Image (cartoon, rainbow, N blue to C red; front, side, top):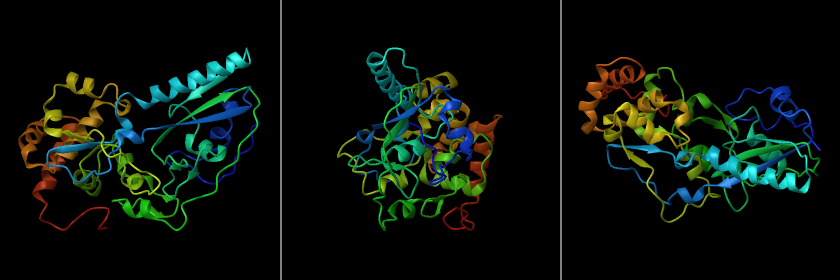
Length: 308
Protein backbone atom coordinates (compact mmCIF):
# COMPACT_ATOMS: atom_id res chain seq x y z
CA UNK A 1 0.00 0.00 0.00
CA UNK A 2 1.25 3.47 -0.80
CA UNK A 3 2.25 5.70 2.06
CA UNK A 4 2.65 9.44 2.08
CA UNK A 5 6.39 10.08 1.82
CA UNK A 6 8.12 12.34 4.29
CA UNK A 7 9.70 15.58 3.06
CA UNK A 8 13.19 14.38 4.00
CA UNK A 9 15.53 13.68 2.38
CA UNK A 10 14.98 16.18 -0.40
CA UNK A 11 15.86 14.84 -3.85
CA UNK A 12 18.69 16.59 -5.71
CA UNK A 13 18.29 18.36 -9.07
CA UNK A 14 14.48 18.28 -9.17
CA UNK A 15 12.07 20.96 -7.90
CA UNK A 16 10.41 19.80 -4.69
CA UNK A 17 6.70 19.41 -5.43
CA UNK A 18 5.36 16.61 -3.20
CA UNK A 19 1.84 16.71 -4.61
CA UNK A 20 3.22 16.12 -8.10
CA UNK A 21 6.32 14.05 -7.59
CA UNK A 22 5.31 11.86 -4.66
CA UNK A 23 1.93 10.57 -5.77
CA UNK A 24 2.12 7.76 -8.34
CA UNK A 25 -1.63 8.15 -8.86
CA UNK A 26 -0.78 11.17 -10.98
CA UNK A 27 1.01 8.74 -13.30
CA UNK A 28 -1.26 5.68 -12.90
CA UNK A 29 -4.67 6.47 -11.34
CA UNK A 30 -5.08 2.89 -10.07
CA UNK A 31 -1.60 2.82 -8.48
CA UNK A 32 -1.28 0.90 -5.22
CA UNK A 33 2.43 0.03 -5.04
CA UNK A 34 5.81 1.16 -6.33
CA UNK A 35 8.58 -1.37 -6.90
CA UNK A 36 12.13 -0.02 -7.13
CA UNK A 37 14.90 -1.74 -9.05
CA UNK A 38 18.64 -1.14 -8.80
CA UNK A 39 21.03 -2.38 -11.50
CA UNK A 40 24.76 -2.31 -10.71
CA UNK A 41 27.25 -0.88 -13.20
CA UNK A 42 30.25 -1.15 -10.89
CA UNK A 43 32.08 -3.40 -13.36
CA UNK A 44 32.52 -0.37 -15.65
CA UNK A 45 34.88 1.28 -13.14
CA UNK A 46 38.54 0.43 -12.76
CA UNK A 47 40.28 0.79 -9.42
CA UNK A 48 42.74 3.42 -10.61
CA UNK A 49 41.70 6.46 -12.64
CA UNK A 50 44.88 8.48 -12.45
CA UNK A 51 45.19 11.63 -14.55
CA UNK A 52 45.35 10.76 -18.26
CA UNK A 53 47.77 12.15 -20.85
CA UNK A 54 46.85 15.50 -22.35
CA UNK A 55 44.39 15.32 -25.20
CA UNK A 56 41.93 13.08 -23.36
CA UNK A 57 38.44 13.79 -22.03
CA UNK A 58 36.36 11.94 -19.45
CA UNK A 59 33.12 10.18 -20.40
CA UNK A 60 31.65 8.76 -17.19
CA UNK A 61 31.20 4.97 -17.44
CA UNK A 62 27.59 5.27 -16.24
CA UNK A 63 26.78 6.81 -19.62
CA UNK A 64 28.53 4.27 -21.84
CA UNK A 65 26.58 2.20 -24.31
CA UNK A 66 24.25 0.49 -24.10
CA UNK A 67 22.13 3.35 -22.78
CA UNK A 68 21.19 2.58 -19.18
CA UNK A 69 17.60 3.71 -19.79
CA UNK A 70 17.19 0.79 -22.18
CA UNK A 71 18.93 -1.65 -19.81
CA UNK A 72 16.84 -0.77 -16.76
CA UNK A 73 13.53 -0.53 -18.62
CA UNK A 74 14.10 -3.95 -20.19
CA UNK A 75 14.65 -5.53 -16.77
CA UNK A 76 11.62 -3.78 -15.29
CA UNK A 77 9.54 -4.94 -18.27
CA UNK A 78 10.50 -8.53 -17.44
CA UNK A 79 9.29 -7.93 -13.89
CA UNK A 80 6.06 -6.40 -15.13
CA UNK A 81 5.42 -9.36 -17.44
CA UNK A 82 6.00 -11.69 -14.50
CA UNK A 83 3.46 -9.80 -12.40
CA UNK A 84 0.92 -10.06 -15.21
CA UNK A 85 1.40 -13.83 -15.30
CA UNK A 86 0.86 -14.05 -11.55
CA UNK A 87 -2.15 -11.73 -11.66
CA UNK A 88 -3.72 -11.44 -15.14
CA UNK A 89 -4.99 -7.95 -15.85
CA UNK A 90 -2.35 -6.25 -13.71
CA UNK A 91 -1.64 -2.68 -14.76
CA UNK A 92 1.78 -1.11 -14.48
CA UNK A 93 3.97 1.66 -15.87
CA UNK A 94 7.75 1.91 -15.93
CA UNK A 95 10.24 4.71 -15.36
CA UNK A 96 14.03 4.86 -15.53
CA UNK A 97 15.12 8.47 -15.25
CA UNK A 98 12.59 9.36 -17.93
CA UNK A 99 9.51 10.40 -15.96
CA UNK A 100 8.23 12.66 -13.18
CA UNK A 101 9.17 10.51 -10.19
CA UNK A 102 12.44 10.88 -8.28
CA UNK A 103 13.94 7.39 -8.29
CA UNK A 104 16.33 8.19 -5.44
CA UNK A 105 13.50 9.17 -3.16
CA UNK A 106 11.63 5.93 -3.78
CA UNK A 107 14.81 3.87 -3.48
CA UNK A 108 15.46 5.41 -0.07
CA UNK A 109 11.86 5.01 1.06
CA UNK A 110 11.62 1.39 -0.07
CA UNK A 111 14.86 0.29 1.59
CA UNK A 112 16.83 -0.43 -1.60
CA UNK A 113 19.63 1.59 -0.04
CA UNK A 114 20.32 4.45 2.31
CA UNK A 115 20.98 8.01 1.18
CA UNK A 116 24.66 8.85 1.32
CA UNK A 117 25.86 12.28 2.34
CA UNK A 118 26.36 13.10 -1.36
CA UNK A 119 22.65 12.23 -1.90
CA UNK A 120 23.40 9.06 -3.89
CA UNK A 121 21.64 5.87 -2.89
CA UNK A 122 24.11 3.35 -1.41
CA UNK A 123 22.99 -0.28 -1.78
CA UNK A 124 24.39 -2.64 0.90
CA UNK A 125 27.29 -4.77 -0.39
CA UNK A 126 26.98 -3.10 -3.81
CA UNK A 127 27.62 0.63 -3.38
CA UNK A 128 26.21 3.63 -5.20
CA UNK A 129 27.16 2.73 -8.77
CA UNK A 130 23.60 1.64 -9.54
CA UNK A 131 20.97 2.70 -12.04
CA UNK A 132 17.51 3.06 -10.52
CA UNK A 133 14.09 2.43 -11.99
CA UNK A 134 10.45 2.32 -10.90
CA UNK A 135 7.57 -0.01 -11.60
CA UNK A 136 4.24 1.49 -10.53
CA UNK A 137 1.43 -1.05 -10.36
CA UNK A 138 -2.19 -1.43 -9.30
CA UNK A 139 -1.25 -4.50 -7.24
CA UNK A 140 -1.33 -3.92 -3.50
CA UNK A 141 1.92 -5.22 -2.06
CA UNK A 142 3.32 -5.11 1.49
CA UNK A 143 5.67 -2.13 1.98
CA UNK A 144 9.34 -2.28 2.94
CA UNK A 145 11.04 0.19 5.27
CA UNK A 146 14.01 2.57 4.85
CA UNK A 147 17.48 1.35 5.85
CA UNK A 148 19.52 2.90 8.62
CA UNK A 149 22.23 5.30 7.49
CA UNK A 150 25.63 3.58 7.36
CA UNK A 151 27.84 6.54 6.45
CA UNK A 152 28.78 7.29 10.04
CA UNK A 153 31.31 10.11 10.43
CA UNK A 154 32.79 9.56 6.96
CA UNK A 155 32.86 12.61 4.69
CA UNK A 156 35.18 11.38 1.96
CA UNK A 157 32.58 11.93 -0.75
CA UNK A 158 32.04 15.56 0.23
CA UNK A 159 35.76 16.26 0.49
CA UNK A 160 36.40 14.72 -2.95
CA UNK A 161 34.21 17.19 -4.84
CA UNK A 162 36.55 19.46 -6.86
CA UNK A 163 34.04 22.31 -7.07
CA UNK A 164 32.80 22.26 -3.46
CA UNK A 165 29.22 21.46 -4.47
CA UNK A 166 28.55 20.12 -0.96
CA UNK A 167 28.50 22.69 1.82
CA UNK A 168 27.77 20.02 4.43
CA UNK A 169 26.14 16.60 4.73
CA UNK A 170 23.27 16.31 2.20
CA UNK A 171 23.41 20.06 1.43
CA UNK A 172 24.05 20.10 -2.30
CA UNK A 173 24.42 23.06 -4.66
CA UNK A 174 23.79 21.51 -8.07
CA UNK A 175 24.88 24.70 -9.85
CA UNK A 176 28.45 23.91 -8.78
CA UNK A 177 28.33 20.24 -9.81
CA UNK A 178 30.35 19.47 -12.94
CA UNK A 179 27.92 16.73 -13.98
CA UNK A 180 25.14 19.32 -14.00
CA UNK A 181 27.20 21.99 -15.78
CA UNK A 182 27.92 19.53 -18.59
CA UNK A 183 24.19 19.37 -19.36
CA UNK A 184 23.56 23.14 -19.39
CA UNK A 185 22.83 24.54 -22.84
CA UNK A 186 23.70 28.14 -22.09
CA UNK A 187 27.16 29.71 -22.04
CA UNK A 188 29.27 28.96 -18.98
CA UNK A 189 31.15 31.40 -16.75
CA UNK A 190 34.93 31.56 -16.53
CA UNK A 191 35.08 29.58 -13.23
CA UNK A 192 32.76 26.95 -14.69
CA UNK A 193 34.80 26.63 -17.89
CA UNK A 194 38.06 26.36 -15.99
CA UNK A 195 36.71 23.69 -13.67
CA UNK A 196 35.51 21.54 -16.57
CA UNK A 197 38.70 22.10 -18.56
CA UNK A 198 40.96 21.35 -15.61
CA UNK A 199 39.32 17.97 -15.07
CA UNK A 200 38.73 17.35 -18.79
CA UNK A 201 35.10 16.41 -18.40
CA UNK A 202 32.91 15.52 -21.38
CA UNK A 203 29.93 14.01 -19.60
CA UNK A 204 29.31 12.97 -16.01
CA UNK A 205 31.47 13.33 -12.90
CA UNK A 206 32.35 10.55 -10.45
CA UNK A 207 34.68 12.13 -7.88
CA UNK A 208 32.33 11.79 -4.92
CA UNK A 209 31.32 8.22 -5.76
CA UNK A 210 34.86 7.01 -6.42
CA UNK A 211 35.84 8.33 -2.98
CA UNK A 212 33.11 6.33 -1.21
CA UNK A 213 34.50 3.29 0.69
CA UNK A 214 31.29 1.38 -0.09
CA UNK A 215 32.24 1.43 -3.78
CA UNK A 216 34.94 -1.08 -4.67
CA UNK A 217 35.88 -0.73 -8.36
CA UNK A 218 37.24 -3.74 -10.21
CA UNK A 219 40.91 -4.33 -10.96
CA UNK A 220 40.53 -3.86 -14.69
CA UNK A 221 37.93 -2.03 -16.78
CA UNK A 222 37.87 -0.12 -20.08
CA UNK A 223 39.31 3.39 -20.00
CA UNK A 224 36.81 6.27 -19.66
CA UNK A 225 39.17 8.67 -21.44
CA UNK A 226 38.44 9.65 -25.05
CA UNK A 227 40.69 11.35 -27.59
CA UNK A 228 39.29 14.88 -27.77
CA UNK A 229 41.24 15.91 -30.86
CA UNK A 230 39.73 13.01 -32.81
CA UNK A 231 36.25 13.87 -31.56
CA UNK A 232 36.57 17.52 -32.57
CA UNK A 233 37.79 16.53 -36.03
CA UNK A 234 34.76 14.30 -36.66
CA UNK A 235 32.07 15.45 -39.11
CA UNK A 236 28.76 16.25 -37.39
CA UNK A 237 27.11 13.01 -38.53
CA UNK A 238 30.02 10.87 -37.29
CA UNK A 239 30.12 12.70 -33.95
CA UNK A 240 26.40 12.14 -33.45
CA UNK A 241 26.72 8.46 -34.34
CA UNK A 242 29.61 8.06 -31.86
CA UNK A 243 27.34 9.00 -28.94
CA UNK A 244 24.05 7.65 -30.31
CA UNK A 245 23.76 4.59 -28.04
CA UNK A 246 25.17 6.26 -24.93
CA UNK A 247 23.13 7.85 -22.15
CA UNK A 248 24.76 11.17 -23.04
CA UNK A 249 23.00 11.36 -26.40
CA UNK A 250 19.83 12.91 -24.90
CA UNK A 251 21.70 16.18 -24.36
CA UNK A 252 22.40 16.57 -28.06
CA UNK A 253 25.53 16.83 -30.19
CA UNK A 254 25.82 20.60 -29.81
CA UNK A 255 26.27 20.52 -26.03
CA UNK A 256 28.47 17.41 -26.15
CA UNK A 257 30.78 19.00 -28.71
CA UNK A 258 30.90 22.12 -26.52
CA UNK A 259 32.00 19.87 -23.65
CA UNK A 260 34.72 18.30 -25.79
CA UNK A 261 35.99 21.81 -26.58
CA UNK A 262 36.25 22.48 -22.85
CA UNK A 263 38.09 19.21 -22.26
CA UNK A 264 40.44 20.02 -25.14
CA UNK A 265 41.45 23.35 -23.60
CA UNK A 266 44.03 21.59 -21.41
CA UNK A 267 45.89 20.19 -24.42
CA UNK A 268 48.27 22.24 -26.54
CA UNK A 269 47.91 19.74 -29.36
CA UNK A 270 44.29 20.83 -29.82
CA UNK A 271 45.03 24.51 -30.30
CA UNK A 272 44.77 24.41 -34.08
CA UNK A 273 41.38 22.68 -34.14
CA UNK A 274 40.08 25.05 -31.45
CA UNK A 275 41.13 28.04 -33.57
CA UNK A 276 39.31 26.54 -36.55
CA UNK A 277 36.12 25.99 -34.52
CA UNK A 278 36.33 29.54 -33.13
CA UNK A 279 35.80 30.95 -36.61
CA UNK A 280 32.30 29.44 -36.80
CA UNK A 281 29.00 30.35 -35.19
CA UNK A 282 26.86 28.92 -32.41
CA UNK A 283 27.55 27.46 -28.94
CA UNK A 284 30.60 25.42 -29.97
CA UNK A 285 32.30 28.36 -31.72
CA UNK A 286 31.44 30.70 -28.87
CA UNK A 287 32.96 28.26 -26.38
CA UNK A 288 36.07 27.80 -28.50
CA UNK A 289 36.61 31.58 -28.57
CA UNK A 290 36.09 31.78 -24.81
CA UNK A 291 38.49 28.90 -24.20
CA UNK A 292 41.18 30.46 -26.36
CA UNK A 293 40.78 33.72 -24.43
CA UNK A 294 41.04 31.76 -21.17
CA UNK A 295 44.29 30.19 -22.36
CA UNK A 296 45.72 33.63 -23.08
CA UNK A 297 44.83 34.71 -19.53
CA UNK A 298 46.17 31.58 -17.80
CA UNK A 299 49.03 33.44 -16.16
CA UNK A 300 46.60 35.69 -14.28
CA UNK A 301 44.94 35.08 -10.89
CA UNK A 302 43.24 31.71 -10.52
CA UNK A 303 39.49 31.75 -11.10
CA UNK A 304 37.85 28.51 -10.14
CA UNK A 305 35.32 27.05 -7.72
CA UNK A 306 38.00 25.60 -5.45
CA UNK A 307 39.74 28.93 -5.00
CA UNK A 308 36.80 31.35 -4.83
